[in-house]
Each structure stands twice: as structure tokens, then as C-alpha cells.
Figure 1 (cartoon, helix red, strand yellow):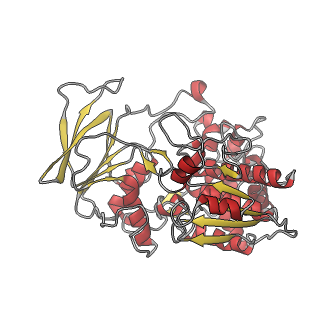
Figure 2 (cartoon, one colour):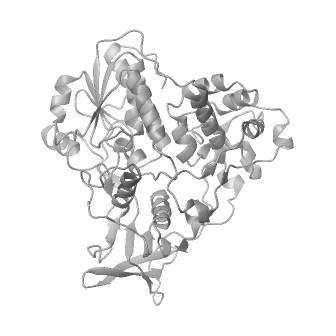
Figure 3 (tube, helix red, strand yellow):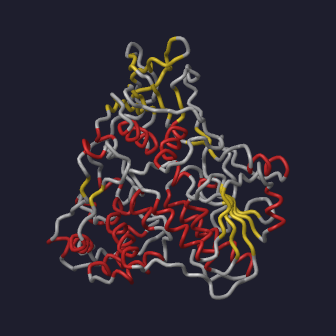
Length: 484
């Protein structure tokens, strides 16, 4: 819990950023790490609140024991802090960088708008652990003789693979791309999380006995049936990659793109990979010297904004159909849940023009090329308000309104046609499996992560991967010592 009176004596401090004028010139991380003494002071602010809502379910999806490792950091016991953190979260260096921190929303001190800087402390613990050499491979002492195939190496697949390997199983991860990480690597820009952190975990997991098979597109290069025959269990962690259909006229103009191909291309450039990729357009999409419009108000839209600025965009406008939220929430009405309030991402703070309560009516252009985006104001029911139409100049437009489920080709196509797998009927193609045993309707196949729950946070994917690993271990061995 830190220092008993720390929350009264120490002000909340956040890690600082490089100035926007500097950070838009590169794709590296731009957060300036706090000094070790400052991190310890922030950890000291964790109070004896009685019921730590930061744990979950309203706070942390993986149920991090936040007060415990705050106290360990305050006392300088970094080795025990990372051990405690790893007991619930395989990859705290990921979540410490890119999680929106619902734990801080649920912090008791957030009632006074001064929550403990949990996310910053989490990242500091992981980074300190690497610096001190505490994060090393931990291979299982005893092997079970069981083999498990995992489809997809995103955060759910990686978390499950590490847990199952530590339980003594032979784990094989099949990845369509040339490197591990899924959209954690190819969808999230490097300025939010550099990819060497993924590489370090892959190296650790390889040392623990996990075998990664790259460039293998299951359902295309290899059948799912062949995996079922080869392994005792198969875990499907394919993610959610099908863009939600915007239904906006003019979407076929040159210059109109879904968000993810744009982000994947730039991540490949930064990673010095060929931009050609399975399932993604190969023609270069570059924002330099152009007017950009981003349709959508979420994290993916924000990532497009930051990427466009770094490529040299002249102007970036972001359209959000939702009304502008209030600057502050009513604490007594919403705490400890995630509140709807005005939030400005680091990318938006770099100079984006944000339009709220605006609908995108159509993309307009000449000779098949985008020239603008026609919009209008909407009422509280999101219905167009007559007479409020206007056109925004645009050379490129990115549609970032979310995902409807996993790709319908490959794995899902084979499972649906040949094996009659059940899928969600809510207009999506999420694979049906409950969050207790994660079994699908097909024998020997489990599912976890966004492919099961729909698009979500990295921290939820880690949780599902860990829980699915426990379920598989229990099914194969009759019992399991893996945590849920």
C-alpha cells in the first residue's frame, strides 16, 4: 500500500513527453521515463483504501495485485515487485505502455482526480527488471509429453504459449506474418510501443521451449485439421481483423482506406520489412504533404492521426459522431467504472482538428480520386441535421470505426464449412466459446482473445490467453497449477 500518509504528502506526477514539435519527427517512443526515486514516491501514494477497486473486475482485467507491488517498489524491492507482477501479467512492459489504465479510473484517489500513476509504475517495474537481469527463461523442469498448437502470436497467443510451456507442454505457435506479435506489432505504432519489447519476450519464450513457426497461414498453407491430428489441443487466437463496414458512399475512390492497412504498412517500414503482406494492400499509403481525414474516435483513429503527422501531413482532421464529452465526469455516478469524459491522446495533442457530433455522409472526388469528405452535424439520435452539410478537403481518408470479427477466410472458412464451428450471431463472426473453459464446438479446439470476445484491449487478450492455457492444461492433465 506504500506510505501510509503518502497520498496526502506527495502530489500525483505523470511521466513527461518530448515536445510535439520534436516527437513528430520520428517513430520512436517519446515518453521521458521517471527517475527511480520519483517512481518510488509515486508508488508511496498508494493508500490503505480498504477495498482496492484497481484489482478488478472494474479495474484490472488480469487482476494485478497493484497495492502489493506499489509497496514493494516504495521499499525498493524491485525483484519481488516483478515476481508479483508476473504472477498475474506475462507482459507488463506491453500493458505499462499501451493499456488505457482502467485501474487508475478505479483508484480510490481518482475520486479526487489524483489517482496513483499505476500504469507508469507498472512500466517502470518491467523496465527495471530487464535492466537488472530478472527476466530470464524459466523452462519447465518436467515435460508432460503433450503437444499444443496455437494459431496466432498476438498477446493472447503469446500469453497462452508461455503459460503452457511452463506447465511442461510442447508448444508450437503458428503465425501468418514474418514476426510474432500480431496487431501488437503491426497495428500499434512504434511511437506507442517499440517492437524490441516483443522480440525480447519471444527470445525468452524460445528459451522456455516455445517453437514459433512464421509465414504459416493456417487455413491456407496448412489445414486446421492437420493441426488437430498433430497436437493434443489447438488454441485459436486469430484476433479481430475484419474492418467494420462503414457503408459510406464513395469508399471506392483512390485515397480512401481502412485504417489497419495504413498502420500495418508504416509499422513494416519502421521494422525494415517489406510492406507487402498477406491480406493487406501493397501500394504505398503515405500522408506527406496531404490533407488527411480520419473517420472514427477511438484508439485506432488516434494512431492514424499520430502516424499521419509523422509522415508530414499538412492537416489532420478527426471526425467523431459522438457528442463532445464533458471535461469532468460525475464521480458519484460512474466511479469506479470507466468514465465518459473529454480525453486527448498524445497524437491528438500534436495538432489534430477534432470534429464532434459529425456524420460522414460521403466521400467526394474527381476522376476516381478523393478530393473531400462531405459531412453534417447530427442530433442526439445521430440523425443528420438538415442544412448543416459541409465538405472537408481531403487527399487521404482513413476509416477507423472498429472491427467486426476475425477474418472470414483461412481458419474460420475451414472451421465453418468443414467442421461446422459455431459463431456468434450478433452480426459478427466471433467464435463461440465461454470464458470458463474456452472450448469451441469442435473437438480439441479452444479459442481465446479478440477472436472470441471481439475487439478489445491487449490486457483482456493477455487475460484470455492465460485463462485458456489453464483450461487446456486442466483438460489434458486432469488438473492444473496454472493460475486463472
